[in-house]
Image (cartoon, rainbow, N blue to C red; front, side, top):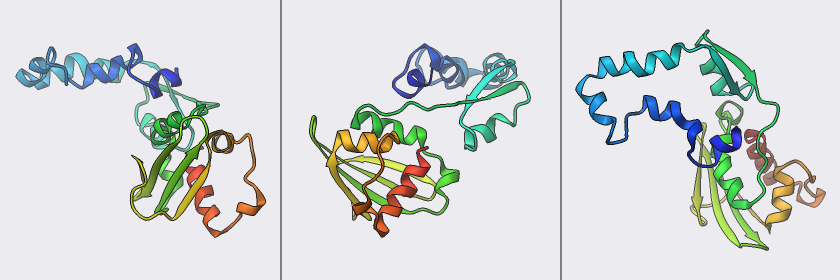
Length: 179
């Protein structure tokens, strides 16, 4: 379920499509009679009794608690990245602004091995932005092979003691936001 939500549109996004009349086939229904559209489409979905799957301690859980008709179910696991591009796509979905707090940092990633890649992850104001390439001045540059980084990101491999520097704490802070 989470994989389908996190990696591309599919039938699981039916609610999003129902309440966001962005398609040209449904936009007139919304623009011509907004009140009727909300009553017929949005309210029944909001009032439907069903489980809602969220990560504990996230804004999603906070929002779900506002609707008594939704039964909150906590996710036990979250998809682990298997490629560096998958890590980049999944980072904004896994990012928890409540855990990020006042963290403000720019991380440059240089990946070697397999498909070489460069990317920037910037955390500021409780938001995470992912940029292709190296953008801005980095607080930390991580230069490694993708296999090693993915093992660290999945929690399968500890970070080498030689990397335990002041900047490594910033990386640990980023990793904490993605848990």
